[in-house]
Image (cartoon, rainbow, N blue to C red; front, side, top):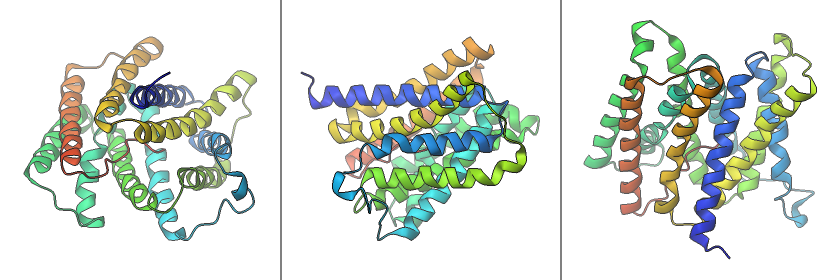
Amino acid sequence: MLSKNQLGFLYMFISVCAFSLMDAIVKWSDAYPVGQVLFFRGFCGMIPIFFLIPRERYFDFYKTNRPLLHFKRCLAGLIAIVAIFIALRKLPLATVVSISFAAPIFTTILSIFFLKEKVGLYRWLAVFVGFIGIIIISEPGFSSLNLYYLYPIIFCLGLSYVAIAIRQLSSTEPVWLIGFYFSFSIMIISFFSFYQGWILPNLKDLFLLSMVGILGGLANLWLTQSYKLSEVTLVTPLKYLALVFGIVFGYLFWDEIPTIKTLMGATLVIVSSFIIFRREIYLKKQVSITRHE
């Protein structure tokens, strides 16, 4: 029988694995329009959620007293997910994963404006270190005017507001309702991309595209369950395994080898987000959830 900490550790590990597999499939899916992949993320992402809805809520599960905040969370999440999908197709996998670790940096800054939090010296230092790391990772994009390096940063900005919105929503809304509205909004917005010329997938591709949604939906639920069961200090460092998966998948499937600058910048970004994480624990704040997309 596993303890709560061990279960939380396991949930975090499989969540990181699921997100990493989803990222790899999204990168593989560049033959299909982004909107079509978004449809599968939204539609199939709702499947795991429906298993969590309590029986007494089957007929009114969609009701909420905070529709505006759900709308803001979904809008920020849509911006983030479109940006990360484009980035995954256009940039090395390890590069995108490395920059995505910077989300807590932007969350720290946005919390000043949206949550009226005071940010002390340690967290400002962490923000500065993190931005240096982003600049080092993105230097090839700056020098060659490769605008695709902006997309992981846009993802971080969107995800940062998502983390703040979820922190506010979680006080009254169940996890499955937050996840449902997001997946449903992805599916609806994807319909506006029909003009791109959706492609009828074969059975193998249909399975892989469906896994984008199923893995994304399960990963979010496993991540939340991990934080519920275990000590945050124990499970959060596991999220950095995503960089290892990014390097391995990038090398195996696309012959990508991360540069020294990417690894140096990733180290600074990881150190930065870890400092922010430790300060939030010290100040007894709710730690922002890493990914919700």
